[in-house]
Amino acid sequence: MRPDVVVPRTMDEVLSALPADLTSVERVGTQNDDGDPVSITGVTIDSRQVVPGDLYIAVPGTGRHGADFTGQAIAAGAAAVLTDDAGVAAAESALAGHDVPLYRAAPVRDYVGPLAAVVFDSQPVSGRPTLFGVTGTNGKTTTTYFLNALESALGRSTGLIGTIEIRAGGTVIPSILTTPESPQVHGLLALMRERGIDAAAMEVSSHAIEYRRVDGVHFDVAGFTNLTQDHLDLHGSMEEYFAAKAALFRPERTRRAVLLIDDQWGRRIADETVVETTTVSATGEVKADWTVSQIQRTGLGHTFTLLGPQGAQLRLRCGLPGSFNIANAALAAVMVLASGVEASDLQRALDEHDPFTTQVPGRMQLIGERPAAIVDFAHNPDALALTLDSVRVADADSRVLVVFGATGQRDVSKRPIMGATAARRADIVIVTDDDPHDEDEAVIRAGVLEGAHAARSSENLTCEILEVFPRAEAIDRAVSLAQPEDVVLVAGRGHEVWQEVKGVNLPLDDRVELAAALTRHGFSVLSGNRIES
Image (cartoon, rainbow, N blue to C red; front, side, top):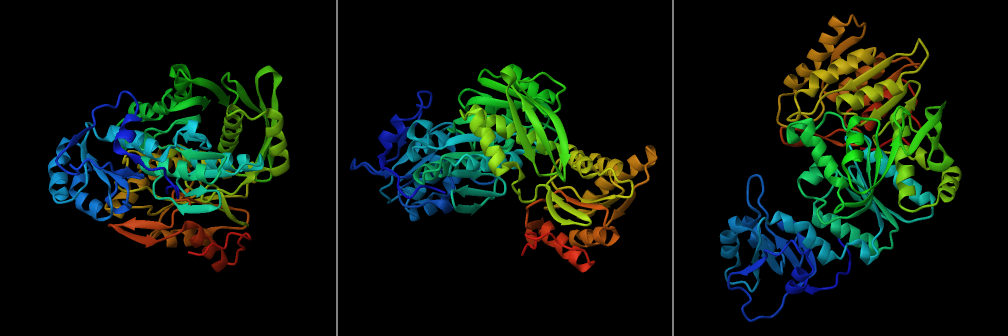
């Protein structure tokens, strides 16, 4: 996740290039007293990722301080070490006898992103790709894939940084975090510049902002999808969650903002940000710069028109199911316009290449057609509601069967809400396990089932509610109960291929299990969806 070639800089040169407000770095200890300047060619906060020439930044962690791993960093070739007051003693001990300089800064986390930006030379002035950032609770992944596909349709080489994968042109790197740590982000941007990438799209999670993973990154255009209940185990409240998302739309982080304003949170960002802003409404219920209109169902997807300033119009098609994908496509199109692309060029690309029918792994991914068998990442109440509503068809003989669970060691309050959401919208609700982590699976399922049963009882619903586990068996049960005209939705995990149970990663891919169940029960699987585990 770094370029092949980095111009070496001395620590003095690196420190002198930092922003003016970052001035508290000081040299400590007695290492490298002969005065020979060391050359820095990389930055990392992970001692396991150190390569010769790196500046190792030892930051405090949840369990251990990074300074405790200074010895490993030095053995791997670290050229210099930066830490805080709490880490100095451990770092000095590890550096005894080594000709490696030690620096101190407080708070050291403030320096990680800016230092990586300087060392990897990843700033906009250095010719890096046009950079799009997308934040929000739902739709980040799909919108970045749409951006990637639209930029490709415009004839540009593209990069992608997100939940599913990282791409630098033809190079694909499996992704672990929605947004990598800031040294990796800056290294990736430099790698993309080195490979001639024209445009890159990045998912920006609230964790990324909270944990400083995009420090030192400046986006050309930042987009906002929506905000719904999620990640309250980290943020504590919706206000704190909103504050983390809204932080992306400050002048030090982006030049322009494109905001979906169909919820109150998007409207608040539009009111509060001082950066140049373009607003988008997918519902037409609020006044916006660009508004979706003339929506027509075509197969599983939709065609629609975007109406803009001075009578501007764009005709779009989105082949992915779900009205929320209309919103994602509209957001991507306006973000590309905000980056400087002419509307006529954009329309030509839309007409000639159909970019919004691109397959997004695990996002409304169609595995079979009779029954319609779909895998989606919907893992919170609002996403589950939108997804269930989008797969319901007008045919009175068609039923919706949903398989889902809730993640362990996360926001407990959303479990019964998800159960109630499924009971209101599906004909057969099968509650199973998601990623329990270290929590008791039965306790998690009970929380979801409580909400489902309560809604069915109090609202006189007619849905059938089942508890089936393990997850592969639940998927098989859903297919066994389905008729050709039905819809089977497997929700919550999307593209994920491992299920974490008590610290052990067990192979589990919903797409593989759903395809296998369809075959086992005599149904066909769509070409291209015979996924191997």
